[in-house]
Length: 406
Image (cartoon, rainbow, N blue to C red; front, side, top):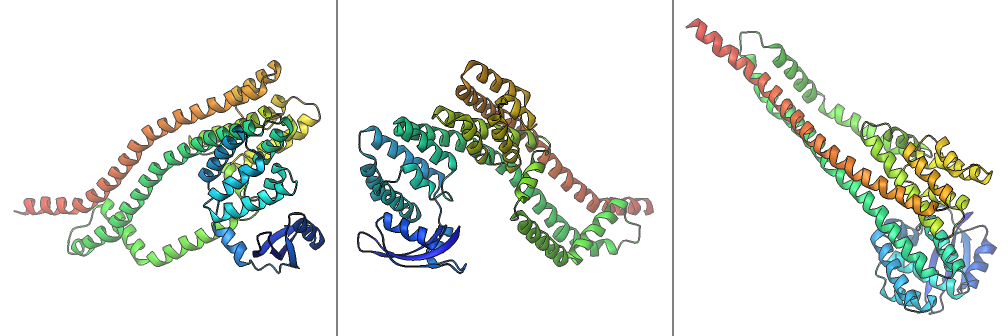
């Protein structure tokens, strides 16, 4: 696949310059003509982003916008409106410039005879595979509005769980940052103010005070070197994280974190089973559903572990056995999947597994917050107490020496 720039005329008389991906220039020209465009020229992109591609990179289609679009589209189809007319109505109502541009292209493709699933699949960088796969199932069954509504329900549940996890992490992170800021303020500002005062003491300073003064002096004398080292390390980690395969390594270590690792495992389980349940309920075959659902898992390490499961199932091995061989899922999950296979209700059982995982995530997040908050506050209070004690200990020694000398 290559990158191309194309200047085209639309059916409304507008002239646009597009940045597109295609197998060859001829394939791109034929595709544009089939969609009703008049092609002025097509040339190979030199790798420099056009203005249109830059603006596309800066914009995005939010989850809320996408959910609302599908809700309204399902309602229009349920009311009996033809698909093309429904897309025209949605296009007139669309406010997001990027989504409007994409939806216009989808409408044009559908108008030229392309299936709705294929039209959205052409913009695979913006929409998940599970969406186009769900549309395929709806088109084959003739119940497109039902499949879209089921997908909306899937979006709401998965996004709700994700928001709960993110929201639960905000408060501990805030406490941790507050702890770092408080320690930095005390060591870089408060403690050095007493250094000159302590120099006037004839008596030897307590060990705790000496240690604190050494730390504060070292930090103050080397603050720019420390900040430069932190910046360099941050840049290195950022660059490394953008390499292929790095995210899977990071995600693997996240799963090993105390307490948090189990929550990340449950979240991955919820994403996989809910995606699979949605696809199977829509009529997608199990092997294809597994392949698509693996992409929906946010944790790349777990996602990569699930990918070979599709091949094992294709070879005749039971899904529950193949899933167990990954070593990434709990015994309870495997047993529930096995029950679903044996009773012929796998799609429904997978939804039950996802609901159970979401409920368990809620319980563990609440437990984590109830335990973490007092621990962090206690640690912060202990740190402040140690610093204050190291400051006042020399004063207590001076007072005692003065009293004994009187």
